[in-house]
Length: 450
Image (tube, rainbow, N blue to C red; front, side, top):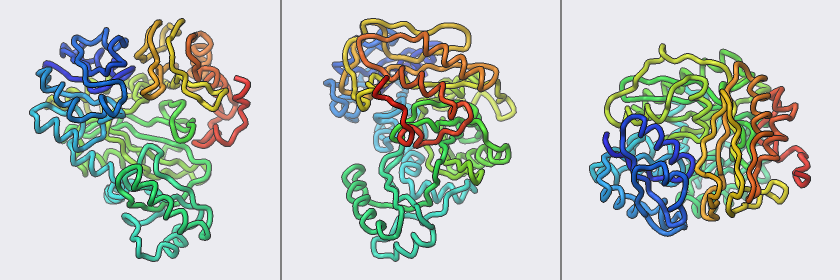
């Protein structure tokens, strides 16, 4: 691999550039008209315009991105996360153009993108799953009897959904058929596929996930993460390892995630996501993400392994640089996502110019960002400004370090979620691991006062 085309923007583009350059790989960055002066453009060896500011006309425009990659004479393409990273059609287009796709093969993306098929693959690999329908719901089948067998409450999910999208809660049999009709219409409109499946609903569930790497011959895990502090099913705080998980559960999710990767011939970095039920001390498969995760830095901190470097090695045909025996875990890491949103005003996006910026510094502190002072936060994209990550010998020390780092962090010119992050990291429920994926929605945090 000599020249890497990066089909993304912001902090993840900057992060990929740094590893590629450290490996001696030249970088070419795709940019929209809104990103021509971004921090990532300063870091990249070369940049190329892929279209106007709206994502649909640039970063999501498959033909424009591929054309730019071909014209740049790149021999590999890294999609980052979001945008086209889990688009099997685009992955195949890249491969057909003679460019190496840094990610799993299109067949793996397609399999895991269909959540009903992914669930069946998980069952076959011995991954624990929630009680639910086998495959998609038959529109003419006896859905009520199936639901009664699963038990209420349950969730109806879009087979083509994922990332917290396309999910409807059903509290009782009276709501079932109407909810299915609504969910089917929503799924068809959002994903172009109205297929649904059902699963048991877990009250006060935590979100736990396992990082895996595979090269077609060797398959390993890099431990687990907890991403339970969420808002509207979007992660806010992530940490590694997942706290307060019984060791027998940890062993099961690690081994079964590796087995799922092995059985599906997975190549690249992937994340197997689970719902953890604290009351029952059980974990159950949700989905597998076939890309680099936003929260990968917490795993890198506790393992010392550069996940992007391993992605590039695997894509280049060199295979993993390590085996499971080479993986060890040190301390605890916590990450917070800093967004340009106003938590006191219903998380209204806050585009604008960053007039002042001071990142915390010191040992065990990492900042992944795509912005510098004077940078413009455009209204066209995800609102994440940066990820602040800390590492310490244990969880209590990591919480203390994150609290200190957040107090040092200063951003002016745009509203940010920093006040909310400061509040959450100091909540007793977070310290005692009593938070869960709907904690923010179900708790009066008095955000209007932030």
